[in-house]
Length: 121
Image (cartoon, rainbow, N blue to C red):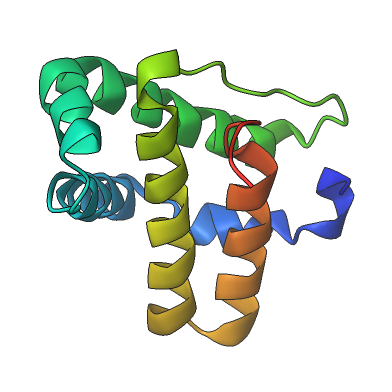
């Protein structure tokens, strides 16, 4: 899906530093309370790397909002944590769908789908 199909101004308005911090906190908590022990272990061991990587994802999203270039940037994540990233992005997608205005959440979901790791379905 081309980035042109996403209303970037709606995403940009949502992805403030305050919201990014909230999403990181909620998303990481969601992963850490998962029933999957291996997943929890991977995050506990790699928590700082995981947070840094997620922060980079959000920064990339914001840069996309700023310059709207057509090339595709995909993050390469720690192989041991792929499942955690997938869970994180799914959580974010579900969370914004429930909490935000329909048009905003639709555009955010598209943006998260655009950026989520290739290994996620």
